[in-house]
Length: 154
Image 1: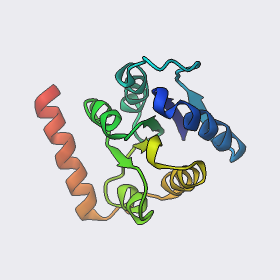
Image 2 (image 1 turned 90 degrees about the vertical axis):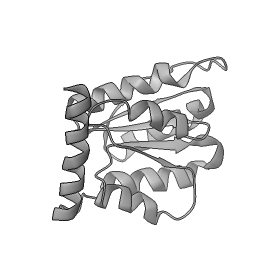
Image 3 (image 1 turned 30 degrees about the vertical axis):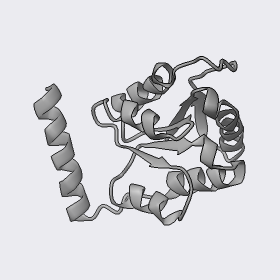
C-alpha cells in the first residue's frame, strides 16, 4: 500500500507531522504538497493530486488529505472515479473503522482545525489498519457506486 498526502494551508502543519509519523511506522508515503506554507493557496489544487493517484489504483493506493474542516477536500476527491473519500474531524473513532469496514474508503479527509496531532495520528493509523469487511452487502453497495460512476463517466 502506498499513501499519498496533500493539504492546504490550514492542514499544512498537520500534514507534515503525519508524513513523518507514517514513515516512522514503516508506511510508504508520498507527500504531494504543498511544500511551503502559503495562506492564500486553494485546497482543490493540492488534494486533487491525491485523488488522481488513488483513482488510478484504488486498491493499492490510499490518500490522506487535510484542510480546515476536511469537507471541501472530500468533495474534491469524490469527483474522481473510484475514489471514496470520508471526513473525520473528531469524535468517536468508531466512524473511522466503519468507513473502511463498510465503505472501503480509500481517501481520508481530516479537518485539521478540529484535531490535535495525537488524535489525527490515532485516526489515520486506525483507518490504514482497518480492513474492508468483504461482506457481500457492502461489496454489492460499492459495486452500485461504481456502476453509477460508469454511467456518468464511461
